[in-house]
Image (cartoon, rainbow, N blue to C red; front, side, top):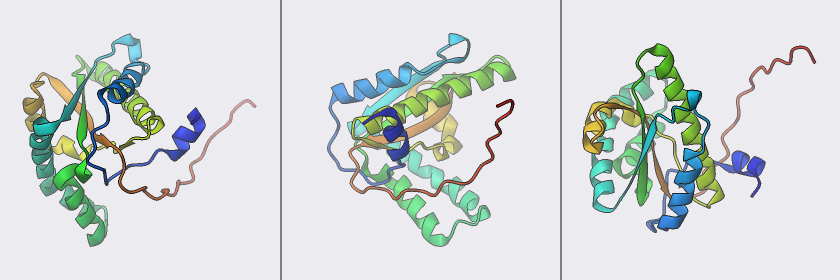
Length: 190
């Protein structure tokens, strides 16, 4: 699959097969993430990959985020059916056999914080695209950030900032193609 195909084919997966991808495949995905561009080359990120009992304990913790998410979904006008889907997904992260957590170094000031967030976001995008190229599904999740302090404590990284998490595994159901919103692209000087 070429880069453009990978970008256009990547989706947020919410249903996974129970089979754990091989360590070699996961290492390739992680390595691709680590090759992301990084502001000032700080590479101020850390990745935690969880499977087995640790993954189960982590998923149980993350499931508690729904008490914060549901009011946000209601405020956003998400229908009850959509809210129910979120509740079910957060209960076991779609059955994904592994979960990746990305943490970043807290910046010393607002500028460094933004640099670290943007660099971490580039790492996440690389991870998602590499996973797609390997035939794996992922779902970039920021809803878990409602539980940032508890998650950081679980990970033993209380001095960091939680960027996002993603379940990862072989998809059990191909997600539909989401509509793309029209956005202005300005071309100046052409």
